[in-house]
Image 1: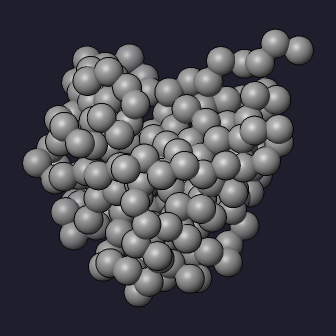
Image 2 (image 1 turned 90 degrees about the vertical axis):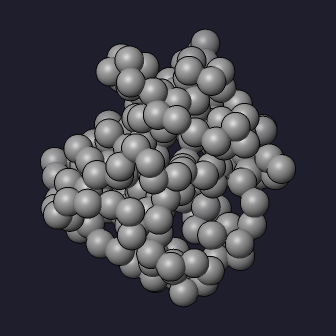
Image 3 (image 1 turned 180 degrees about the vertical axis):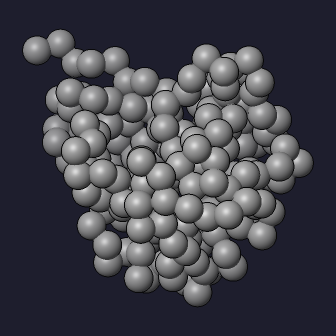
Length: 185
């Protein structure tokens, strides 16, 4: 079987506060979803053509950590913000800074693959009214330790653990079926 080429995708991790007492916005994917059914995730999704037309500005460090060209890095950030609005009703203004928390590439044997970038932003910068959507339900800001107890993918567990510990951005991949983490800084 030829591995499926990963699609570029991005998520936005909205945080209230910092350290182990911080709260994170997460929602539950639909049971009938083709990818990640019934698990809690950060808002996000694949890069769409519109994201490439209006890329978001990133700091040079954040752009470099995405491991993407400058234009693609901006499109990834735009996708994370756009998807967050579509899935939650919350909007992040252009001037609000983003940092990179992690990159992840789904396993080669997966029928749906993504090369995902997980951006972080301060929830104090968002506007709008938080509301469930067709793509995410049970949306709420949860304390990091509480979020860690939800049904999660291993990448989401690793990100929550890193947020609680204050760890630097990392790359999450698989080798011979085992998850591997590598610090990006």
